Image 1 (cartoon, one colour):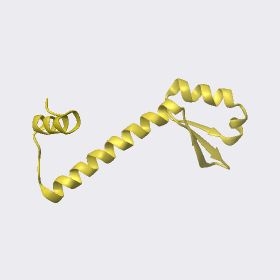
Image 2 (tube, helix red, strand yellow):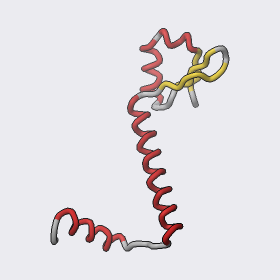
Image 3 (cartoon, helix red, strand yellow):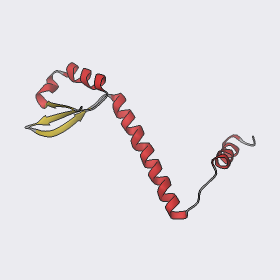
Image 4 (cartoon, helix red, strand yellow):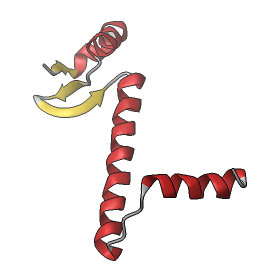
Length: 89
């Protein structure tokens, strides 16, 4: 369940840090009753960014497939990459 805290709670940085690290979720900070900031641990941020980058790569692959309709056999593609980057194997 998401944590929602008023901006005045940012005075107690250790408590906010502990909440972020223990829950592995962002803490939503409000100002005058409205959403203002999101605070999260570095680990949660890096995990989120990994997911975003994976989603973007999948989207690019789907767009490329829609454009040219080509599919590649995984074994052939990996063998080609090995030859290209490691020479003849």
